Image (tube, rainbow, N blue to C red; front, side):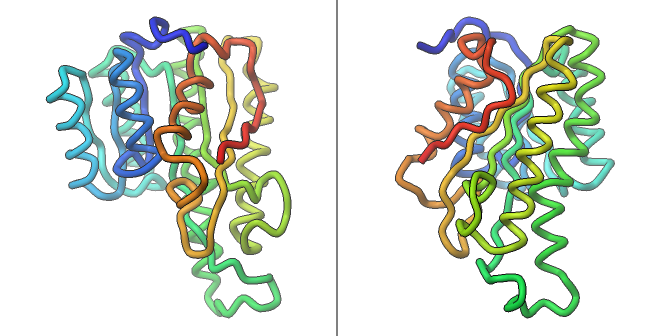
Length: 235
């Protein structure tokens, strides 16, 4: 059973929060009394989520832009700390799909797809987590949750780029969990099914976004205080 009270008043950042899992997670945190920073490339979508939260009596702000842009990363962290008084929970939900092709069949002479998938699924969480960690360390606690493709648990669930990035994201979670567990910081992930051409963080699956978001909220809550370094399949 999820402990709801421990999320009340917490400063929460959710990336990719303009739709699907990210949106459902942002709304879920707000419903539990958290202060939510909604981030997304799509400014209109992010603002709409903020409006939904504030209309319901919650507290939310929006930051839009490229999650790999250092200026955006800095704005996300400084806005959370400055507006909410801290950054307690960080949820990454920024992956994008590849074309599910085998490596030798990839027709991408400029490696555009490879770099885009790496940037969204691995570089973005790396940069923002690095920026958020000093604030979590200063507070003596924190919860980090990544959304990854199920390709991170096995091969064959996606193309070469998405599979490689998903495994990299799982490695990042494992590293964070081991390095910072003694500092009160936990890192976990949920792994969601992926279909061809569908965003692994927002794609169609057997589970609805709200159900996937429930897993995110659980991993961020005190009910999961002994859960660290886990990749939880949800789908």
